[in-house]
Structures are given as structure tokens and as C-alpha cells.
Length: 274
Image 1 (cartoon, rainbow, N blue to C red):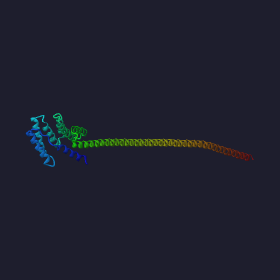
Image 2: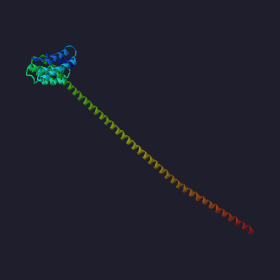
Image 3: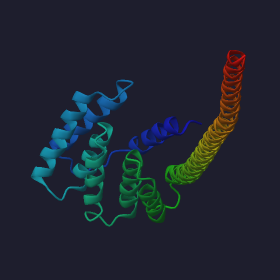
């Protein structure tokens, strides 16, 4: 059975108890009882206006006799039927000091348990049902409601444990995800660092290769210059030797012409002498 529907059924059991009457009923109590019974019995849902009128009558009776157990008990029932559960709980608790009759105390504890249960105060309602059974062990309704409240408490505790376990699992999963994300970021950073290092090494190698290439080119140019200078020196010596030979040849030709000229002049003088 659904816990919510079961709760409503049990609350109706608690409120359908016979209303308490004084040996000499006073007029406001009788009027309140008629309004209360009419509100509960004449409609599927309790008539709020009739319950409010019954509440007013019970309060009038309490004003006339503040110690009236009957008026206080019925006022608590009227408040409960209006779903004023905290006010009903407070009213039932006031009645615990107004009587020593075990049956009356059993009814008060029972209805107090219902009011507490309606507020979700399961553990407190269990204690009220137990106290009701201590005053009247044969109350089957109190036994039934006690069993239901204990089952609700067990389910509530189980739900809390499941929720806590789920929260722990979610937290663990979140931590795992964070660790994975952190590991992934570390791996990415390590990969980026390696790429940066490789790129730096590559740039350094390229720079070194370029420097070596420039050095080789410079050395080649220097060697070419040195070879060019050496060639120029060799050509200058050859030219000088060639020039000397030419000069010597010219000089010999000049000497030969002079000798030939002298020979011609000598021959002319000999011919004249003849």
C-alpha cells in the first residue's frame, strides 16, 4: 500500500474516535460536537467552515472552564481536521496534564501521534503510539499506527542511507573525473612541453647548420680569394720574364743594326780610297 494513502487512512482512524463528553455537557461543547460531526460525516471532505465554527465553540467552552478536558480534546480534533497539525499537537500536549485517566491519556497520546506523524515527525509519533499502548495495551489502532510509523521510519532511514551512498558515489565519481581531467591536463602539458623542446632543438639544429653552412661558404670564398691572389702573382712573374726577353731581343736587334751600319760605313771608306 502506498505510504501516503495509508497515512491518510490511519489519521482518519485516529480522528473517528468517540468524542469525549462531560457528565454535564455545557452548551458550547454540545454545539461544537454537532458542528464537528456534521463537518466530518456529512461530506466526503471535512467542511472547513463547519470545523472553524466547531473550533470557535470549543474555545468558548475553554474560556468558561480552562481546565475542561473535554473541550480541549475536541478542540484538538477540530484543529487536526483543519490540518492545523502543529496547533493540534500543542493542544494535545496541554491535555496530558489535565487528566490521570489512562483511557483518556491513551486517546490523547494516540491523536498526538497522528498529529506528529502528519508533520513528518516519525520518531516522536512512535513514542506517542507506544505511550498510548502503555496506557491501553488493547488499542488495536495504536498498534497498527505504531507498526506503520516504524515501517515509515525504517524506509526513511533506508532512503537516507541510499541517498548518502548515492552522494558518496557521486562524489567519488566526481573526484575520479577531476583526477582524470587533471591527468589529461598533465599529459597535454607534458606533450606540449615535449613539442616545445623538440621545436627548440630543431631550431637550434637549423641555426647550427646555417652557421656551419655560412662558415663553409666563407671559407670557400677565402680559399678562392687566396687562389686568385696566388694566380695573379704567378702571371706577374711570367709577364716580367716575357718582357725581359722582349727587351733583350730588341736590344740585340739594335746592336745588330748598329753593327751592320758600321760595316756599311767602313766599306764605303775603302771604296773611296781606291
